[in-house]
Structures are given as structure tokens and as C-alpha cells.
Amino acid sequence: MDDKFSLKITLKASISVLAIFCLILLAAIFYRLGYAISDPEDDLIARGKEIFFNETFKGNGRTCGTCHRLDNNFTIDSEYIATLPADDPLFVAEFNPNLKQHLESPRLLRQFGLVLENADGFDDLTRKFVLRGVPHLLGLRFSVNSDLGPLTGWSGDGAPGDGSLRAFATGAVVQHFTRSLNRIPGVDFRLPTATELDALAAYQLSLGRQAELQLPLALKNRSAVRGQEIFNDPARGKCSICHLNGGATGDPRIFGAQAGNLNFDTGVEDFSDRSKDLLDERVPPDDGFGAPGDDTFNTPSLVEAADTGPYFHNNAVDTIEAAVAFYNSDAFNHSAAGQSIQAETGSGIKLDAAQVVEVAAFLRIINSLENIRQSIRLLEKIALTPTMAVEDRKALLLQAGAEIQDSTVVLQGGSLHPAAVRHLVEAKHLADGAREGLWLKNRHVRKALEMLQQARRELVL
Image (cartoon, rainbow, N blue to C red; front, side):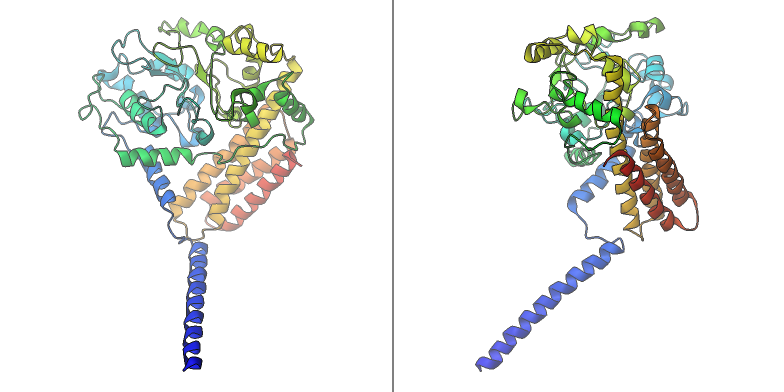
């Protein structure tokens, strides 16, 4: 009896082990064939993406993607705007008579990429508004949290209520999606549901890098190496005080362990090019966070900076070099932030022209590395999913191509790494071939991945 009982137990255990092994094997086969077991978070992100680009909330035709363009690093600028057709929803104030007066300033939108925000409320549309650029949405996971609570938008007051990404989406619908300036929920738009807000937040948090850089990086370019040293040097560039590891987080040794993203008065309003007023458009001063504002603005991440210009909340300068040079200006060094740095370190920021170029070279290269990382991730997803739907495959290839192109333009703009640029140009050609051609698509993807790895090896040791 004991032997038979032991045999039964052994057989049952063997069958259980075999069943588990079969399940693991089937899961691996399904993954290889593109039928991975569904992850609830992935499903939520996919739902958020669908809402982000297609849901108008019964408003004026705009979606979140109207201003945060997938093919332009989730932002817009005057050069990109010039490529859009006249009936694009971005220009709804030009062809909807109900929105002609105070929804946008169409000329400033087209010429400078500035959108109108009623940050202090809708009670006086003629006088109470600001004009701001469209912030990109990359790496939000590291630029929203603050010891003051979540801060979104250029000044941290871009959302009503608790300031979270969920509240930001609600505020965006009320501000930008309305069918009339009455802004009546249920008439001029419908408000997002709680489920939609969760999905939108999940999608936005999935964009861009999901980990902070760890500086210093072993860069090959000598100018960029010097730029990285200046960036991290508390006696010279002092950049890492507010942009730890190139991100949007304040140095915890100065601001405290839980500081996170911070607001500062950098004096950029005093520096901005007021020639925008020459268009006979009223451009009120932007007083930043709060109502009335305290003249402070959010710290943006710099990892994604080189390909997301123009720069600052008011698109004051066009190049990453000019953005770095701003911190030499009297406007910055006389500002509250500049004075604070002088008190903390004993001096202001004063870089010579060569040092400005070196810091910008460093920022260009870390941006290019991020573009390459994202391109590789997208192409690997295609390579690992041979049964992917044709339209999904094309969309990922288009996105990968845009990232590769950004990486190329960022390096070329600083006359950096011509050998890496050649590899990137070839990778772009291969990605386009995989999207448009009929034959050798998988081979093109694999070869493009090789080119991207070679480009990366040109940039870092």
C-alpha cells in the first residue's frame, strides 16, 4: 500500500511539473509569435494612446495629439506648424467664428509656436492670459513629482485641482477643446471619465526614458567630455544643481532628498525677445506659478532638450547653444535663482564662448544617445514580433525613423561625430526600406539595429 501511495504521489508531482513546464513553453512560443500574455498596464497604455490621438471629447475637433505631436517629440514649433494643412484642428480659431477672438493668437501660434493659456482663470479673457510654448511629454516620470506635490505644465500650474497628470488632461480639455468660449461641460465638450484619465496618465508616463541617466558617461568626444565636466562642476557650470544627472530633479544634497522637480525664478521673462509685440498682438508678461503668479517656472529635463526647442516657457531662443548661453546673462544672474546660486556657491555663472559650445555638445550627445536607445527599442520590438499587424509595424517603423532622424539632426547641428551620423543615415534608410518595401523587411530591421549599435559605439566607450 505504501509503495502504491508513494507512486501515485510521485506521478502527480511529475504531472504537475510537466504541466508547469508546458505552460512556460507555450508562453515562450506565444511571445515569440507575437501573442504575449496581456499585461494590464500595457493594455491601459494602449488605451491611453488611442484616447490621446483620437478622442475629441465632443469638442472643437482637437485631440491631445493636436499640440503634442508623435512625429515631433510630442511638441510643436513654428517650423513644424508650417507643414500643417489649413484645416488642421490646431488652427480651429481661424475658421470657427465662435473661437476667433480669445482661444488663440493665430499669428503668434504660427510664427512662434505659442499657445494661449488662461492660467489665472476665464473671468477676463481680454487681459488675463499668457502665451507659452508646448512642452514635450518625454520622461514625465522624472519631471512631475515635487515635494510640493505633482507639478505639470511650464509653471507647475498647468492643471486644476491637485496638479496631477490626470488633472492636467481635464484642464487641457476645458482650455483647448471647447466649442465656444462659454466652456460649458456637456455643451462645449464632455469631460474625460476617471477611466480615461487613468489611461491618459499611464500613456504619458510611458513616453521617453524610464530611468534616469547616471553621470558621468564615458563619452568619446573631447568637447563633450569637457562640457560634461563643466555641467557637473559646482564652481563653473553649476548645471547639475537643478538638473541632476541631466534630468529635471534638484540635487538632494542641496534641496533635500524628496525635493524632486522644482520651480525657479530665472529671469527669463526679462530676457525674452519682446519683438513678438511688433505683430500688434498683446503679449502680457507671464508671472509663472500661481494666481497671481510668483514668477517661477518648472525645471525641464535636459536629456531631451536638444531636439525639443525652442527653449523656455516662451520659446525665447531657438538653439541649445543659446539656451546654455542664457545662464551667462544679466537676466539670469540678477534673478532670484541666480542670486541663490551666488549665495550657495560664492559666484554666478559665467562661461566663455568655448565652454558654452562644450556644454551644448554634451547635451546634444546625451540627447542623441536617448534617440538611439528609443530607436533600438522600437526596432527590437518589431524584430521580436514577426506576426505584428502590418499597420502596427509601419507605425513603429515610422516612429523609429523619426527618432533616428532626430539623432542625426542633433549631432549635425553641433558638427559632432560624422562617422556616427553616417551610420544613422544608413539606419534611417534601412528603417524606411523596411516600412515601404515588399521584400527583405526583417533583414532591413536587423541591419538597421546593427547600424544604430555602431553609431552608439562612436559616441560612448
